Image (cartoon, rainbow, N blue to C red; front, side, top):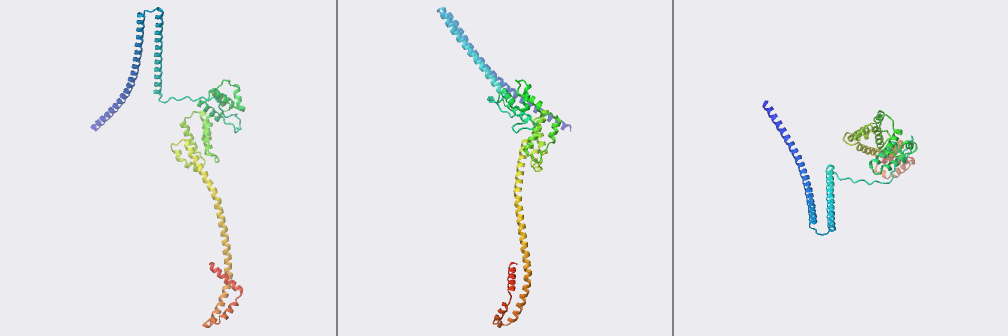
Length: 399
């Protein structure tokens, strides 16, 4: 046992050593990369220093040349002064060029550094649209006109315009002022003329917003359910609107919002068939939007099935009625045939008695000669008997 423990200790020690070795290798690799970066930067700086040294050497040569010119020139003071000014201008020009190159190098270095930090391409600034935006009107009337929107929809539309940054802030503020109608327009009376759009929204919400408590709003959300005549789309929108009210009282993260909507949407569906059809989507990792899309598909298929059933039901009723009529006609015919059978039985009995008498008279071969007498006797059969025989034959053929 002690040997096994020692072996385990040794193995653990080797594992730790191996892990430490891997960590050291990773650290060395990081240090090597940093060293490469520093070396590259040092190389660039060396090149810049060398370039500056070369430029400085050129300047020194110019200065030496200037001194030599001053010493060697035998010309007049005026000519010497002109030459001096020319050289001085060249020096100033050269110095400006060097300063400009230095400034350009610094700018390039800053751009490279910024690019390395962000590692994303520079995003182009969006073009600002100078046309005044149009915002849906809001009047706070109890009975909302069709051309107007609710307070939440109005706020969402304005904040979306501000977030896109397509319009200047002053244009959006002016459009917000124009969108207020009726009683809501009185909000502007006590506001500063330079008030921003967000300030107008806050003031309007304070006056016309929902003053329900957080508990009341959450209770409304959790007790909501789909109505029998409410579509899947309307149910989802009503649920989202209720959650938006709740989010004004307490901040909700996107993940929490998705889970709350998904859970409440599925559990409060009115149709059990649709609920069972999207159960898999609810239990999986699908989002609320995906769950709603699949529920709408199930609703559409249910409507099509119901429509087909409504079309098929009248046809089945018509077929059943036709069968009932044919059955009644057949029963009536069977009754008539039964009555005819009863009438003809008596006639058949009479005919059978007369046939026996005829057979007795014909007994011999000479009966053929006496067939006239038989024929005459047969002719004595009444018209009613002949009719009965014809009916009996007809019934026999039918049977």
